[in-house]
Image (tube, rainbow, N blue to C red):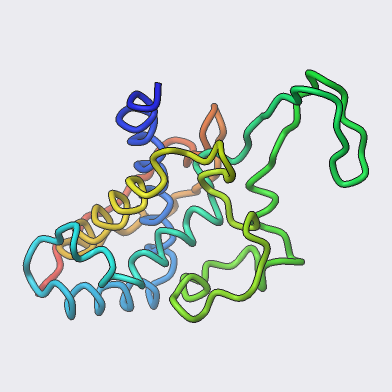
Length: 199
């Protein structure tokens, strides 16, 4: 089950996070320039490798901010094994408890400008003190997604490879809306115009 989760379910959610990253970069040219500057400085014209992951903090911040705004799995459900109390609320045995990551990621009590795209909030040294579950695109605790580190590295390196060679701009008139048929994806896909970057 864990292998299936990593190699099947993990790729879909990473692809969705990449889609949102591309959308947000298209809508935020300054963030895209900052990402391209980092890629040009660190990679120059070579293909990124796993060892480059820690050298691409801004690229990672873009990917993490995209998952904050649009977590691929915005909600999860847990079942209470027995009676309990949660934040003062009684919970009956076998009750379904819904955890809404989307709402957590947009909570103005935790996030400055919660609806805004601000990758810098995830840069080293910029992370403010906040509850450890305020940002939970992979869940948390003993049930945290087994593929979280794999997905982060895969997503960041894929974003680096794409952004290193191409600019993907949303087609004029594109109206991107979130849609949740199970995962939180852009409804109708992401129509883009692909432009090769001049290195």
